[in-house]
Length: 101
Image 1 (cartoon, rainbow, N blue to C red):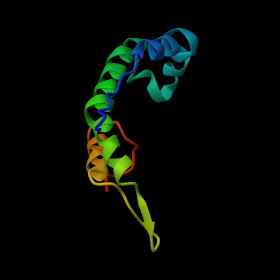
Image 2 (spheres, helix red, strand yellow):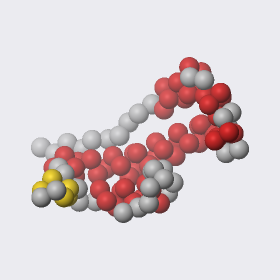
Image 3 (cartoon, rainbow, N blue to C red):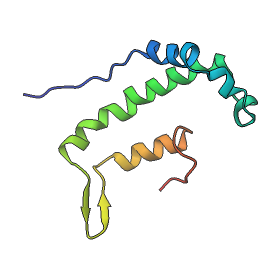
Image 4 (cartoon, helix red, strand yellow):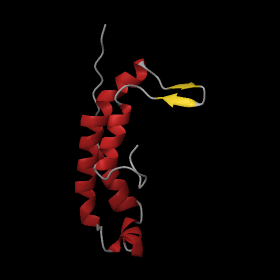
């Protein structure tokens, strides 16, 4: 039997946490962020992040479940497709500031 997992998450919870519970406006007022982000950007950022999770990251989870990462002779081999997903995230500005591998 094959079970298809679907990524579902209600981003309303995150909006509540970021807009009403945490001092997000205070954080966004810091020099590091004040010229780039505002409270009004949160909805768009969450929507795009959710889309990437649903369309890019979630579909590859089953591959990782069936082909786990392997550490052999000091080298890690990741599941097929994980490197490409990592590169997609990096190249589209959602990853760390490190360069793509």
